[in-house]
Length: 294
Image 1 (spheres, rainbow, N blue to C red):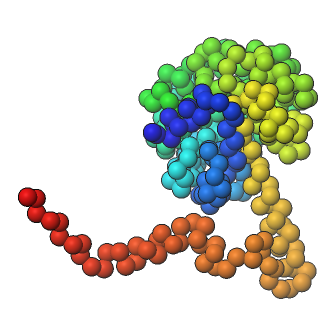
Image 2: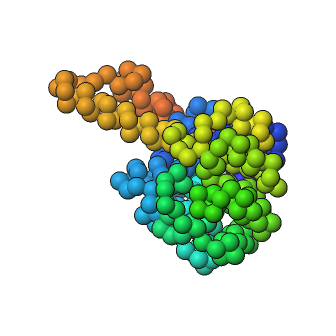
Image 3: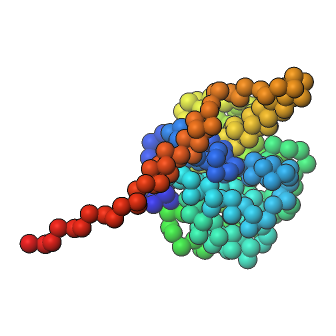
């Protein structure tokens, strides 16, 4: 079963799939090894890892290259941020082609103007609905693998209100999208209402100190959500931890003890050191000849 088939089966099955956010090969590997069923490539984390805010400053090529590196590190499906599709319908066609070639199982694409902003920042702008639906139709028509999932994200809640966000989510599903992503509902009532009012599978974006109130993941599953992404669970934690350790180093002029107190080899084992070590001597001697067929 391909990764895209695996993700589709998860979404169409019972329960909710949780996809913690990762932004490079290391964090993707750690999410996979932790036993989660999917990994989410966060656009905010990818931008931050390259030294930029999440303001739509990365190109399609940069995002796809990162997705390909991450996908190569994991055995579970990768869901990737594809921002606005990087332009109009022509650009969306290439966006889908490139992400599919990279082995990604699903992408989400939003209705913000470009350059976009993180969905939990102020002063976002959205494009007209018909322009967005044209991009959704282009994405659906372009994919060559019918299991490759198109997630339609709308940021219209902050700009045009909750009712319009629901309307756009339903329109995107009618245009062929597989999952609806209403970004940043602002109350618990709105969070509960999304799966009730949207006529298809729904994604919940779980962001610490974002626009959406904190929601227990078990409660989100009970509300009917089929997929939850946690974009900043590692990225912002790493930023805070790095700042803490660097400040400690500067203040004490001594090497801080990292969390986990791992040795160099303990660290490398997280990224396959034992498997690679086994290859050092595997090919030293020729393989035994195969027995002749009787």
